[in-house]
Structures are given as C-alpha cells and as structure tokens.
Image 1 (cartoon, rainbow, N blue to C red):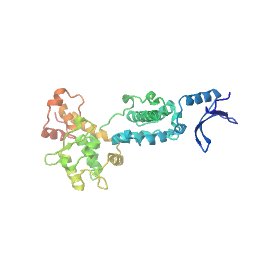
Image 2 (image 1 turned 135 degrees about the vertical axis):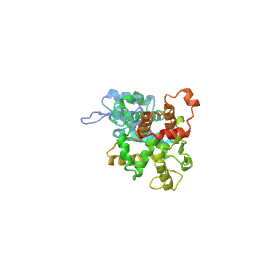
Image 3 (image 1 turned 45 degrees about the vertical axis):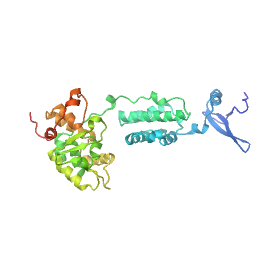
Image 4 (image 1 turned 135 degrees about the horizontal axis):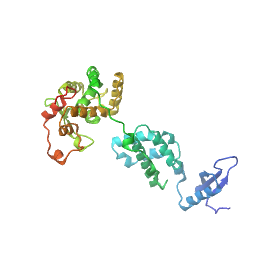
Amino acid sequence: MKLANGYGSITKLQGKRRNPYMVRVTTGWKDNKQIREILGYYSSYTKALDALSEYNREPYDVKNMKLTFTDIYNRWIETDAFDKLSDSAKKGYKSAYKKYSTLHNKPFINIKIADLQHCIDDNTSGYVSNREMKNLASKLYQHCMLLEITRENKATMLDVGSPSATKKEKVPYSDEEIDILWQNTEDDTIKLILIYIYTGVRCNELLMLQKQHLHLDEQYFEVVKSKTTSGIRLVPIADVIVPFFIYFANQSKSKWVFTGEKGGRLQDCWYRRLQASALKALNMQHTTHEARHTCITQLTVHNVNESVIKEIVGHKAAQSFTERVYTHIYMKTKIEAVNRIHTDIKD
C-alpha cells in the first residue's frame, strides 16, 4: 500500500530480524533536501503502520524518543523543581538513580513497568529506599509528560512493599558492648558513639551543634534544627560524657563542636563510615539510629518517667495533649535521668 506524500515510509529490511519493518518520517528540510529520522523498528507491517499513524495524528520530536534513562534524569536534575528540593531529598534521588543502573542506557520510552519493578525487587536497602526509587521514576515520568515524550506515569503501578515487611529490627547496644566502648575511648569515634547513646539525639541533631548552643556550665545543649517540631529541644548532658564535649569543643577551631579532618563540620555520611569502621574493629555492628534506640531503652529499663524520656529524645509519639502543652521538665530532672544510663537498675 502506497502511503501519502509527506506521511512517512515503511521499509522491510533484508535478512532475518526480530523487528524488520523500519519506519521513517520527514522532520524538516535542508538545502531543498528532506531531513529524515527513524521513528522505530517493528515486528510487523501493521504495528509499523500504527506507529506511523500515531505520529501523524500527533507529531512529536523523534530525537526525544531516543533519550535514555540517564538523559532524562540529567535533564530533570537541571530543572528549577529539582533545585528547590532539600539537600536530603536530592541525596535520596541521586541514590535511587544509582539503583537503576541496568536501565541507564535504555531509551526511556522503551522501559517497561517490569523493568522498573525488577530494579526495585533487586534492591536490598529496605522500604524507604524502594519508596525513593518509585518517587524518582514518578518524577522522571512527570518530566517526560511535560515534554510530551510520554502520556502516562508508569511509576504509579510500581510495588515498593510495606514498611513492616522490609523494616529491620533495631537492636540496642548491650551493657557488655557499652562496657567495651568505655574501654576504648581513646578513639574519637567511640567518644561520639557514647555521646549518641547518652543523649539519644538523631545523627544530624548532634553534628550540626554549634558552640553557641552548647552550655557546659548548665550541662545541656540546644537542638535548634530537627526533622520534627518536637525535636527542637534542650538536651541534658550526662556527667560521664561532659569531658567528651569539652574535648571536642576545645579541639574545634570553627563554630562547630564536631569537625572533620579539614576543620569543617563533620558530615553525617562521613561519620557513618567512621562509626562502621570503629565498630567493626570491636566486632560490633550497629546503625547510627540504634544508639538513639539504646538511650530510649536504657531510660525505660531504669524506670524513667515516659514524659521525661519523650522530652529528652524529642519524641512526640503517644504524647497526650496535656503532655504536649503543659509538661515542662526541668533540666535537673533530665540530667538525673540520663545519669542513670548504664548503671545498676534502681527501683
């Protein structure tokens, strides 16, 4: 069947091919000659004609059809929408991109839901990481829809599992392990781990501490930036770790209490590496968050009032309206509470 002039062409290629029907269209003119682009290759004449008909019904930029997963990702991260994201969100998306490595060089429009799902199923980093992978795919499809490269967001069909199915159980440090940590405090990383255990702060709540917010005379420090509103609080410093704060504050030549080798603020990613290395040398394995979990566990087994615990660690879960609005725990009470960590249990 002869196609109308300017409609495009379908050519059956020689040899044994899986997709022998080549579709080409005219995308412009130069020096009175047609500029022709290959629309695609298809297994049958009918499929090739359908693709050509769809193109003529709503012409699109053929070059966009060749953009790979990486091409689309690189274009998206240059947008204002990406630029407005928080640093942590950007870091999460960059990590998710790496987990799609098998699709990086594949044309985006040829990627199937099964391809994306396979990458998620192969991910071993847990539910949160799966969710970031799905969110990234969704962002890329939304970007493609704006460019009229695709018409649907396939990411909505992806399954990331459930938190309960992928969440790893938190294991607090045992008393024996805390004893071992105390035997190795010549290591600065071990000092930091013990600070986390005795304060219950989140990783960046401690690493973002500035000297102006450290009050050693009154034995507390201020958390002025946290992931939750209840995380903004005054954190007591147990007697046994006061020397550690003095040590790090005196060692620092900047506004930060905890610094890296070059004098800038110690970054959480670098601290996690230092922690993993220090614990491995002691035949231990714990996440950063498990130090916080240890603090809560220790305070609980030492019969510290639940409201006091929540005030210390900045946790709003299960707080009643009265607790949130009216409860004010004096610093002396909080210091007495953290001083009970890793001591004999007293009723």
